Image 1: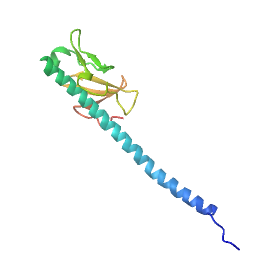
Image 2: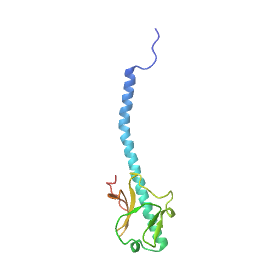
Image 3: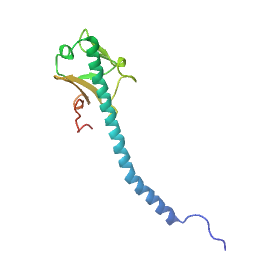
Image 4: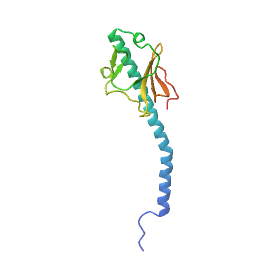
Length: 140
């Protein structure tokens, strides 16, 4: 009698259980790492936006505090940010790769607000999380 080749059903089930357990352990960690990377990317983009404002301020020899007179949230919807009737910032002059958009949640936009210092936020129009200069740890 020849010995049979192949695996038994029990051996296959054991291997599948081991792979499933390993996947259940690894998957949440991978998702956490991806979310952390997205948060880091959003903070970096917010910093680039703020630096664009500051570079523009130096180039134009104009203070942001003289132009942005309110402390409302202003959504960044495109490459050109209109500060008032006579002043605008073209982000692509300072940031390569197009207009930044938050990566953590594609429904969010970046917002800026001048409240004695320029602050950059991410949010959905109702909820806002400060990303620069201080980071709001509840950003989700």
